[in-house]
Image 1: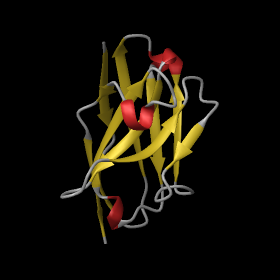
Image 2 (image 1 turned 90 degrees about the horizontal axis):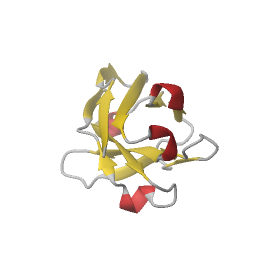
Image 3 (image 1 turned 60 degrees about the vertical axis):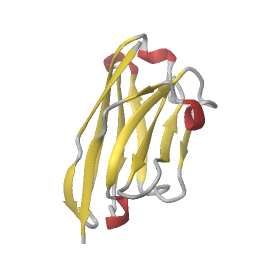
Image 4 (image 1 turned 180 degrees about the vertical axis):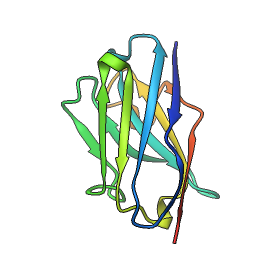
Length: 122
């Protein structure tokens, strides 16, 4: 089992920045592909970004590409999402997720955190 805990959400004005963190415990974090998803009110949960177990591969949704950076520190069992130039459309609950393989993360994530709220005001 893997337990994932997100932090770093909050309220920020448009154009601002936030760094989300996801700390893992339980099963060996360094063996897992991890990523971020988000769910806005009234919308389905959507993929945001993913990173392979060793950080060699990353992928981003078009909506955040160029404004966000995903990274991880396996020694600290932590993954990050740096978000810049935030827009009101980025308002959502952000979830971290983990999967055994990078290719499965988008559709077959095995582990999920509880989520952290990000609110961007105009």
